[in-house]
Image (cartoon, rainbow, N blue to C red; front, side, top):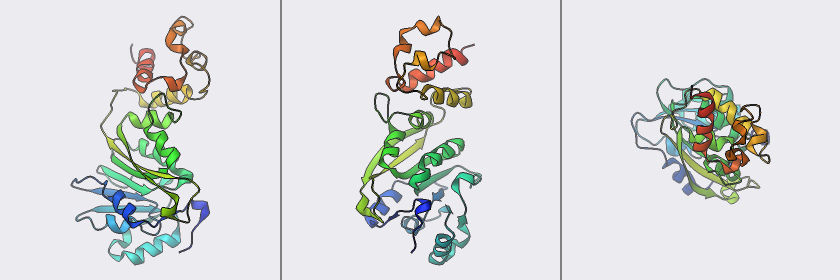
Length: 252
């Protein structure tokens, strides 16, 4: 099967790892599952063995869609040709997103998932390890960033296992990691999430500077005298960042 580098394709060939990923799916009914980038169907074949599953997949490569339709004729209409980043929500009911996510758009995939909250109940994804670590990072880590904060607003985040390059064809030059996110609601009861997202992006825009310098356009000079603003963003916990935002924009 021909690979397309432009689509960031690396096919998982370790069957044990395929099973490990699918076993992370929760035992819930109904089980509505969207697979992103099924490629050659490495984990698809195990997903489709689950009794009563309501399955759909989005694949950007027409050749792979035709291959999958031949491999799984009973699910012929469930394979959608298109871009995940441009697709509409695939289910009216709550659903799960799973996949060996293309490395070149994996961060964008997560931002799209966050736009679908609260309808996405779980995310089970394989990412480049660096991206996986950023998603589950806590403050104090060099991996702590925008994705860490925004995913923590709604999900419990767990890093499950590494996947080495030799488990793929062709072997990527980086390690991979599989994580699972479980939806828990609006953890911090933020009223205006769009406003908070903008605030977070500003806070992380100049990581090497203190919050006093980064947020000087958001707070009065008197407020900025507080020692809290001596910190850089990676030193601040997610809850503290939420409290800072709420104190300024949701306390009135």
